[in-house]
Image 1 (tube, one colour):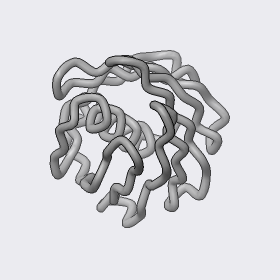
Image 2 (image 1 turned 180 degrees about the horizontal axis):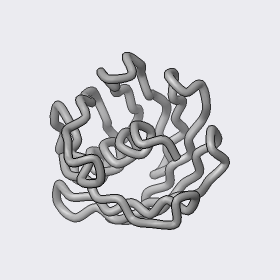
Image 3 (image 1 turned 90 degrees about the vertical axis):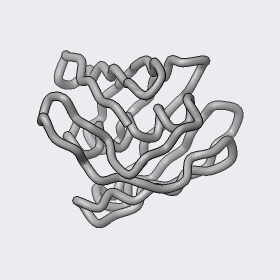
Amino acid sequence: MKPNTRAAIAYIAASFISGKTGSAVYDQAQARYISISGTVNKSNVSVFDNEQSCHVSGSVNAGNLNLYHYGDKHHINLQVSGNKFNGYDHGNSCHFSGIVTGRSVSLYDFEEKTYFNYSI
């Protein structure tokens, strides 16, 4: 999965689960902030990745987020249950899963076969 796509997923999952938003997500693997902001609530998602100059948006139905990444031009499915999430990135044809604890996110990318950590 692309690093900015992974960061957007982490931001959206953390915002949806915790109800908290920010103006960036910190990517520990890249040791830097990625500017992402927007609205994430129980009915829709509309965030903007300032680095890629694109939106990631979609609808929410009972913890299932059906997203579209306008920069990469592909769908992302994200399912949330409690503080855990999993999903599928259609752009890279790979699964991911993770857990949110407060403002911290640990995301496992099945394509990379490793964990990535973020905070918002």
